Image (cartoon, rainbow, N blue to C red; front, side, top):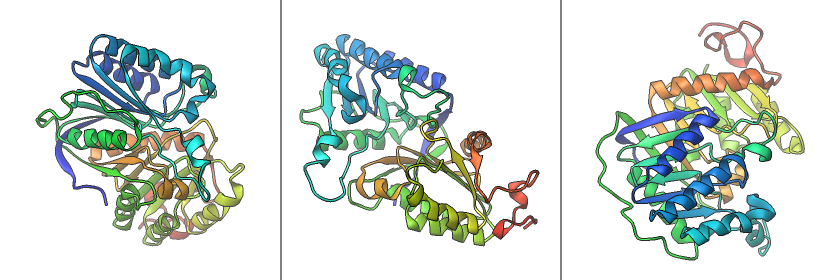
Length: 359
């Protein structure tokens, strides 16, 4: 399970792409001690802007540690990262493509956790893995990201340090990574971190939330084959009268993997929306308008088993309401599956099996 909830935090939703990256860059520019980044950065658009800011802060004497996966960066990775080395950035690289080919059986990967921590007091989680500019398909939308401040920053910093120690070849620079944390808000936050080949705490936390749901469950993930336990939990929640709605990628090359899952969910009365692949990357869950799960975790069984990812759990009705609106906007743009309610049917009035009726 995830670690216990920590109170006294402030969590802000940065759903808009440009606004979110502007906030990240502003935080990096304001760093006075250190910047830690673990991210599937691109080398164009927003990603290039972030790399340039990191190099500038390193030249200004700020300790900068950057942990990346070379694979998604493509052939230009070496050229793009060289200026950071020259500027004094400590660079850690885990190339999943090359390492996985050395071993037989399903590859184990280390998914970068989409985490930015500035001075141990300001963190950004989620929605950091979508390229911008020429590298992004027209109309592509990143997942929502969170800006977090407060006592839970100690835990997020430990997540970064542990991943660096495990995968980077060199040491982190000396800095004040764990400053004292005063309360910054009223939200309760927990960090759920998974490691390769082990149970995924974020999935466990989500399963627990779905099992206790009484009104509405929303799940969005760019995955084609969620774990069987999650599918079963969603079906069971629907059988209890809970309205369940999911957004998954539109069936393509993963049709044979994803089709049985979709048929199972739709037969139970779950609303299944299909988003266009490559243009939508949201990873979020909302339960009963209060429980929020967001982060780098893909709800695909392969990622759950083999990847080391991280998720954030927040208990806050205000944040949940804003993410419900994000979900509804994405769902309205996606092609609905066969279990889509008839026009005018509201989720509060949907009964198990897809028929209308007030519970």
